[in-house]
Amino acid sequence: MKSLIKMTLVSSAIALALVGCEKNKPAENNTPATTAEKVTSESNCPEIPANKVVISTDAQKEAYALGSSFATYMKSNLEQNQIQIDTDYFIHGFDETFRGEAQLTKEDVKTTLNIFDKRIQEESKARFEKQKADNTLAGEQFRAEFAKQDGVKQTKSGLLYQIIQEGSERHPTANDTVIVHYTGTLTDGRKFDSSYDRGETATFPLNGVIKGWTEGIQLIGVGGKIKLVVPPDLAYGDQSFPGQEDKAGIEPASTLVFEVELLGINDDNNNPEPQKYQEPQESQEPQESQEPQASQELQEHQDSQNSQESQEPQEEPAN
Image (cartoon, rainbow, N blue to C red; front, top):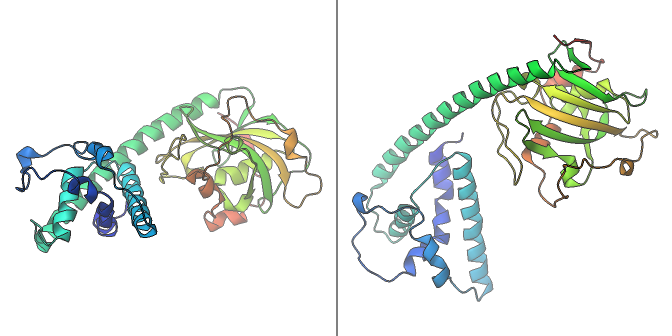
């Protein structure tokens, strides 16, 4: 996790969008609130709707948009790192300092933020270790149960797969770029990504995706379909990715489950037409949204070893 000190220095200007929450209120008492009088983060801003600013000029609109953008950034960072702050004191800290009436010296601020950053780092580390342990156990149990199903095989790397449809004799190599439809879920069934939901196929270079995909997609031919159960070391390892919109996030040491249709190989004249493939019934209506982070990561280049895995993987029966 990035240092919260750095994040605070960059994003503290977000309060510009919030200061109006305080300035539009009647002046009841100029005495700063004490700790005993501390209010919750919901106590002030819910009153804003009755005192909303009126945007009349382009300059006002630009300033408001800048504040809104900063607030979205700050909110996203706090939520991703599971940090809660008292919005009232956050606003006071910015407003009073901006007016030259700060109650803390620069040294006080630096010391406090150092302590805050250390605490957040410790909490993040503890959360990471717990997620890793929980996901490791859940993944091992899921893979053991999946290995018992009919038709499931395991490669030497530990990838588990079940061929649903063999496809043609034309198999891709690790150096090919494939055209696919896929759904990715966690072991508890929650969906973290789906090309079906986006209403469009995906195109990936096989030497630029997670190792489980590089190995697994080569096991079927064009027109085939396969289910892959990918252990963490063949997926994202200890990395984590936040959920996007209605999709689940990926936590450290997650075992990932994919169902993939190989629709074609790029620059291959024998590819079937993608329109012939129907979306699964459980898929949601296509949405115009940004592609989830997990999908973007699938397209990013992995370790240089991936580019050398051009031979067809060897397989052995699942234990």
